Length: 324
Ligand code: UT7
Image 1: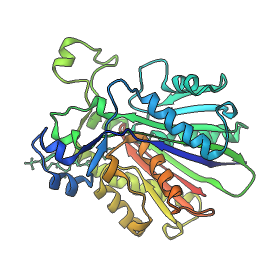
Image 2 (image 1 turned 90 degrees about the vertical axis):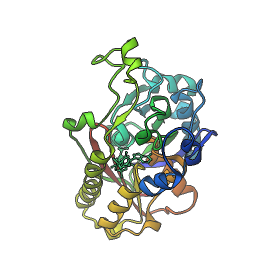
Image 3 (image 1 turned 30 degrees about the vertical axis):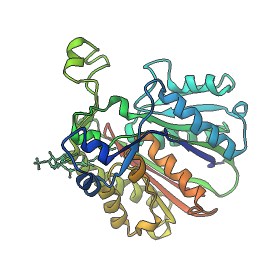
């Protein structure tokens, strides 16, 4: 019994924040942002639109693409670091808004690797006999972004991507997975306040502790190693080589991380999914968006080997290898 992706969809808010806009907000330049990150613009959700609203729109497109209805779903998993609330989970909000049956629904928190972690968890349930699992990556990072911190505010954007995982007896779908985490790096990429370690207070707000903090250059070094390791491990498990990969979809944090990963794997950039130029770093949403774009543009065809790799807060990292 294999698990395969039967449909994909994504949604991004309409509002665009360009590098030129950011030049007016912090001491930066379009040239610095483009050359150091590869980002040109990103999307920003409206203040009254929560993460679950982006998730719903992506989910509806994925359901349409898989030609199933919300009533056919047997499980909903949402990967997010920016849920609507601590609880209920964003997945429960999605379940109700979609009009799905009373099915198991829960969130996964694994930073930018969240959607891949969720896909792997869903694969486990498919192997147990479940079918039609909705796996969403949805983020509103701009709502935890400090727009006075030039080292982070240029990177982050809002978006959602979704896929339907189905059961099959055919030789297709997920071939191998690999996951890892190292919590000793936690304080290099984190949001200090709002949880039990530093509950919200006037002081925590005054000290800007409810925003994402990152030591970018330290994160960068580990990210390059971890993304390569993830690709290497999933290929090894499936007895395949980088040359067998028709399309590589890496998490979209920085074009230099993506290029370094592709170079080490000897995969040319025209076989690599890129959307950070238009959407910035959308965390758990970046890979399903790229997958949807590649399917829609015909870059992925039936039978192709697709390698998905991610790295994020935790640190967490991992990969999923698929036969489309
Ligand atoms: O999503 C998963 C996890 N996230 C990542 O994987 C992100 C990984 N990190 C990165 O993408 C990069 O480290 C950044 C894009 C965040 C930063 O690029 P960098 O080349 O690592 O820059 P840096 O942090 O080493 O800073 C170099 C210089 C510093 O100035 P000094 O100290 O050399 O004078 C910064 O203050 O660039 C300065 N700088 C900026 N200058 C103009 C930092 N941000 C900006 C900015 N505009 N926006």
